[in-house]
Amino acid sequence: MTKITVAKGDGIGPEIMDATLDIILTAGAKIEIEEIAVGEKVYLAGNTSGIAPEAWDTIRRNKIFLKAPITTPQGGGYKSLNVTTRKFLGLYSNVRPCMSLHPFVSTKHPVMDLVIVRENEEDLYAGIEHQQTDEVVQCLKLISRPGCEKIVRYAFEYARQQGRKKVTCFTKDNIMKQSDGLFHQVFDEIAKEYPEIENEHWIIDIGAAKLADTPEIFDVLVMPNLYGDVLSDVAAQITGSVGLAGSANIGEECAMFEAIHGSAPRRAGQNAANPSGLLQGAVMMLNHIGQTDIAEKVQNAWLKTIEDGIHTYDIFKEGTSRQQVGTKEFAKAVIANLGSKPSVLKSVSYAKDTPLNLPKYQRKPSAQKELVGVDVFVHWAGTDANELASILRKTERPGLNLTMITNRGIKVYPDGFKETFCTDHWRCRFKPADDSVITKKDIIDLLSNAVAENIDTIKTENLYSFNGKAAYSLGQGQ
Image 1 (cartoon, helix red, strand yellow):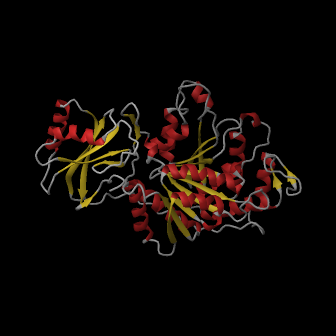
Image 2 (cartoon, helix red, strand yellow):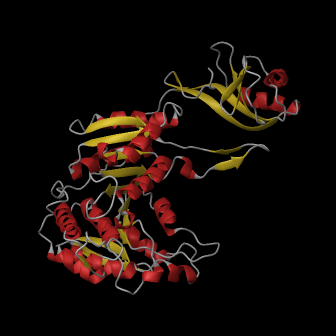
Image 3 (cartoon, helix red, strand yellow):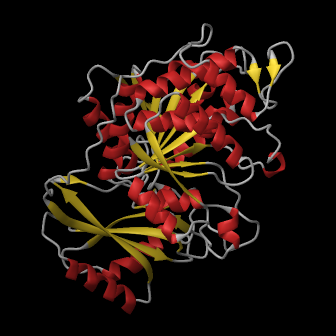
């Protein structure tokens, strides 16, 4: 018996949660329910996160959280409960199955059946941004080895449990060789541990084009946060059934399961809402806790109900649907189909009673790290990189010389092109002329010289090698 936390939410939330719980409990789910209040009433009671401290305690104690949609009040000062929950509980993996239900729900891609596994905590979504000059702002893209290992392993474990055949990685490591390069490297390392599962890597731009055009060639996709955010919405849209989709957010300690749609307050209390999205979240929950036989039974009954043409108003279509029903009636139809399988739609089969094997990250031995130079970022309103170089050479100190200047990543000194457009934000690289050792004090002395020359330094990035390999980018044109 697994104890779970349930929040019925706002709008249509209570109705679709009741329907979902009726279905999975009738199917034999071995769960004990502890309910908490979240959402609009909690916001309006003065809690800007939409959740009370004691509710956090319940979620953290039970580890498994099944959440219906909530309403965030209009106006400033209210935080997204979903974002808060993902960050506070370390829910690193967002999982979005995207399956077409052709011919029962209209779609241009009738055989589409894929799952997008998206890293959920880092990448550009760390939200670390700065304005550095009049013309340039920066957003830091943070990719960590623990983040990569956890999300990639989850993708392969999920594929194994779900009986899927292939995992595809999307990155842009032809450009972002360090950050996306790490993600791709970790993918290749972990793929070797799952020889029974096919693996492949695509550059994100052509991969996204293929996803929109021929999604049937993909099975499980894993990718960093931003790419996954965009492409999971694209994939859900082209299935033709956004309102039927569930979502999981998985962490090392806790997990949250939900529908991807909102609370639809105008439909509240009408016994009209489709509970399918939340039910799909509940099926993912049952798989996560190892009750795969119950998850399989519920999913096949749901598919059979869709196939039977018993539809709620949102997907009802004359000529395709057979009967329009309300929320409660739809749940009863799914319950009546427990033990049955669809004949047109593909039935599901999960590895029996197999929880996901997700060991906690183990830190690797430290590499040999050596300081080999520094990039000094400068705010300078001129346009001629050669002029800037003549100024910067006054700051050089023995053993630390100006070797390159870039502007927006393009090398403009030495041997730059006069046609290259430059902003007021310059990356100025200083390295030893030979293999001499430099120290952080050398960098401090360099910056002191810059102050003396009235140069506006806005940030520095130390250049390191790890185990003798350069761990920093060159300027384009190098």
